[in-house]
Amino acid sequence: MSSQVDSLALLSQIQRKSLAVGLVMSVVSAWCAFAVPGQFYPAYLVAFLFFWSISMGCFALSCLHHITGGGWGVAIRRTLETGASKLPLLALLFVPVLFGLPRLYLWARPSAVASDVILQHKSAYLNVGFFQVRAGIYFAAWILFASTINRMSAKCDLEPSIERRESLAYMSSVGLIVWALTTTFASIDWTMSLDPHWVSGIHGVITMAGQSVAGTAFVILTITLLSGYAPIARVLNASRLHDLGNFLMALVLFWAYTSFTQYLVIWSGNLPEETPWYLIRGRGGWQIVMLLLVGLHFIVPFLLLLNRSVKRKPRQLAAVALLLLAMRIVDLYWQVMPTFSPGGFQFNWVVLCTIPAVGGLWLAGFARRLPAFASVIVDDPHSEESHHHAHA
Image (cartoon, rainbow, N blue to C red; front, side, top):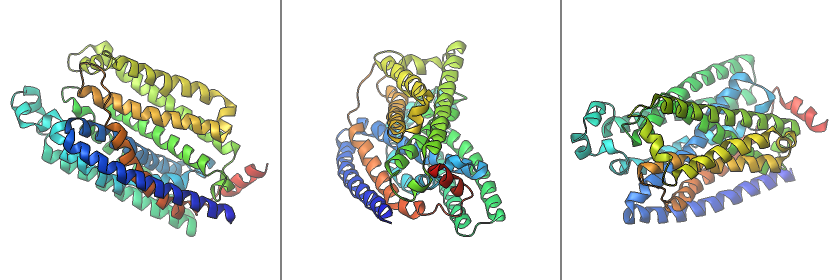
């Protein structure tokens, strides 16, 4: 009982501190929006995309667990559902992006469209009104499925039955399909169209891979932080950590494979509408960022996760997860910022304001909601199995 109280106290402390940081940095970010709008909107987009990727990764992995079952998801299921429940907050946090469309996207500037034949050709899809409608559809679909699946999951715990679990698995299957489709189009709208002349058939898959890495790394970091408290302590053990470490390693490999595939196809094709995207990001200092991604987003985490002991020790696995979350920010920065400084690397200091602003509000909402979700790891078919492993 005391460990449950301790976990609530810890989450309450995280909520208060995160909210304070979020509010203060939101004020600073608002000042940046007026003082340096050219730097603010790209920096805000990076911050939004990062926390959006965590929530969407949590949603996708939650659906996957409901479909497949398996003991790997027992300790993280409620954390995944809590992360997905922050999508309504992210819909609100998307509003500044809508205000900054002309500063972010070339196709949102009438003068640029008037002088560019390619933009005129794409204007039926890339226009402000349709962009806003699509964004509304994406968020409506994500919120609807996330909230529905979370409710169904809670009912399965309170009143377990085969019929309820089958319904939950079916809804989660549809949710995964919706996730794949909407994330693909959202990645086209929000990141690929930053350079409307560039095309990539695999960019949506890379986005989904990045979301999966971010979601898994975040929940690993969360449960290791709460590993000494109930109810997480009751189901988390070395075997579960090892499974999650293997899962994270597989997702890192998937991200690396899809990223390299995009690079290889574009570079070997050598088409004028595709290669400039990599040319800009491979010179003027941006190539150093690319090498950091290869080393710290793939090689180092992969080698660490090959080590069995790393995957079975909470602190070491948490360190790998934290590294991957940091590199997710770097990856998004590398995708977004060269569009606004094609001549060479320039650090946009406003990200030091926007990331804590968005992150503080998101994390405060997460910490506030988690206790209501995490209290339920009862009547789960894998709970006894976990209990056995913990005593073995």
